Length: 241
Image (cartoon, rainbow, N blue to C red):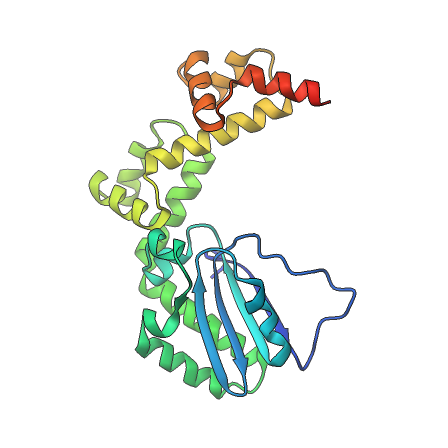
């Protein structure tokens, strides 16, 4: 489960956090949220930030949230990026039979720890059922992020045993953009970190170190993502200092 879940939050009115505890910030992470009050269980999937009012529901019972890693929730629950961009997906509307089975388990779980265990087993069963697509998205997004060069996409196809068309379809469904678009974003991000850190002598050093054909290609890409040039960005940064 560590490949898909980033962190777990448990709040219980029977054991409230102390006043010295830090405020809760979910940072836009997708989450499976379970709130339990008087043996009534509310289960929701959030593709974006969990609303603050939902996080406050623990005061009358128990709240358990499983926060997912980027792009992991979609293949686990076979929900597209488009579906997760909209409002919360209620678990009983996603799959009434599975939601009912999980609700029964939660009802007979006597403690927050037992409820968390039931939710954990539910997620593991989903990962197991959809292991192939989970692995494709996890492997592809990580590999592109680590090495966003142009030929990385062609290298992955035999490794994943997929045709280009199938890979494109699965990737766009769960990530929301094409593999090429994702690669270009990752490439720009790595180049931007190098530019911002000042670890270069010439702009061409940044361009070549990050897989751009030449300096002009890098400048065009930078301008596309930021609406300014690397030179203007650096000049503005120096003036701000």
